[in-house]
Amino acid sequence: MSFEMKRRVFLAAGAGAAGTALLPKSFAVAAAAHGKKGVMLMNRIAPSSSTLYVSDADGSNERALLREAAFDHHAAFSADGRSVFFTSERTGDGNSCLYRVGIDGTGVRPLVAGASMADCAVPSPDGTTVAFVSTNSDDHLTQIWLLDLRTQKLTNLTGTAALAGDPASPDGHFRPSWSPDGQWLAFSSDRDTAWRGHDNGKGWEHTQELSIYVIRPDGTGFRRVATRDGYCQGSPKWSPDGSRIVFYELTVEATWGAHRPEDIGIVESQIVSVDVATGARTEHTSGAGLKVAPQFLSGTEIGYLVKGGPDEGLAYVSGTLPAVKRSSLRSPVWSPDGKSVIYEKVDFTTRKLDAPLYSWDPDWDYRFCDVFPVLSRQGLLAITDKQLGNSSIVTMRPDGSRQKVVLNTANTDLDQTLVAQGLAGAFRPSWSNDGKWIAFGLGGWFQERAVSTAAIYRVAADGSSYEALTDGTVNAGFPSFSEDGNRIVYRVWGEDNGLRVLDLRKRTTTVLTTESDNLPDWSPDGKLILFTRRTSATNFDVCTIRPDGTGLAVLTSSGANDGHAVWASDGRVLYNSGMYGFREEAALYDNTFQPYGQIFSMKADGSDKRMLTDSQWEDSMPIYIPQSLLTG
Image (cartoon, rainbow, N blue to C red):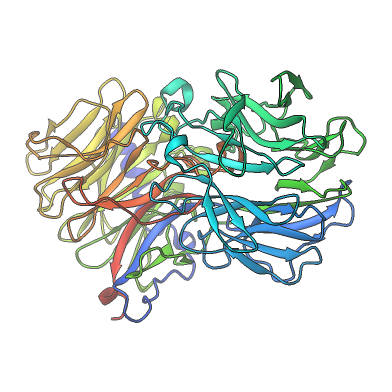
């Protein structure tokens, strides 16, 4: 059977009686609050819930910590063990703030709240000061901050001119830890390292190289106490006598696999400590397993987390306590006497479509949506149901009516295992100007593109007819219609790269670019094509070009990855960027691709860049739905 005939057979099944069972359940974009301009739909890759638990160190007597639970994680004990400091998103999905509660789970009190991310609060031994990480500064980088609990004074400890890193490099600071005498803070940092993609620099997503640093609470004494070329060292904790600092250590390349579900049980790390005075190393573990979150329980015992794999749970270096196998357990912290442990359990059940998210823009409500949402000029929404379905193309009115699966990947010859992993499917729908057609790419994506082809299709908006537009011999994807509906721009990847323009009237294809370009989006006025270009071995930037191939403009230059750019109806550009770096140690994330990406907007010439989200998570793929479409 020819390629074309084969595609027609399975598309006929997908466009016909296929798939009412695939329709998103109860999806309707509710009207925004009174006085708002509308709703910004966006995608977020993050746990949907996180619950704090406390148990004995041997895993017995487990119980929920908080009587008033929300999205809670990253706990720390006070020195006397009577209270717990933790991070919570109880003010809104994505808004990380700091709280304190009694060890009995009552009396939750806010410590640090606001629009900026705040995380990993740890109280000083004397109970007067809290160290934490926050993006609450003009540079939006993750810095170590101090909160004086008596005066409520906030101090940006690492965000001073004297300690500023190379602005072209990562410069984040993570996981602070007090020395037993309260005279020092240890933390991890990727300052002055290189932006580096996974797979030896070939991958889009960045790896992370961390070293261990110390600083006094007054900002003096800053120095690096542990580093290893080609390795990442994170989550430092002090020994009871203050002479050593323990941390986890894995290769920089392994920080990618440490948060990917297909690799998390394969990646290996070790628990290591250094003498603070001499730098002498001691490796406390060996062998397989991703070992993170170490903590001295005594001078000779260290507890840690085995993340992923068959032995996931708590483990102990010297074996004075039994290992505790417990899945989905994260961020354990042991009490000062070592008898109990607090941790969170996370869940990745996908958020419901239109689930409320914290909004950083007073003019718009933020809501969750599946990937690649696009709005027709007639007011119909199309999405790829990647997180809530099987990467098929679904259309509907924003109010939830007229839902329809116009392309069902279950009826294609795609490898359904790859579809379930999010590595294959019908990606990136694009509406024609008259609303009669939807173009999309069908095939293998991400790392699968190296061994899979993909083709450009268009399907009638009612699902009644379809057409293959490319022959499937290369990996062609991510199409976008021109403003008049007569042309489609798309990208190819493989031996030949770049953007191509297909004239639907003449059935001719023009080479627009030959670089590593992706995700094109034709402007509403037809004058520019927006796209992402690999501008160096480790960096991607947002660019525009005229449809005739002239006028190339590079709009971003952060050194981090910028991409997933789309046009807003007002002519601004919405895009995703890692320009402010990681929000957390990369190896501690789960089920993510690019865990540090935030949503930005800018003018079409690249000026007036504005950050629209400030969460710990991977935020991307925004689209504005005006209030007029939501109120009838």
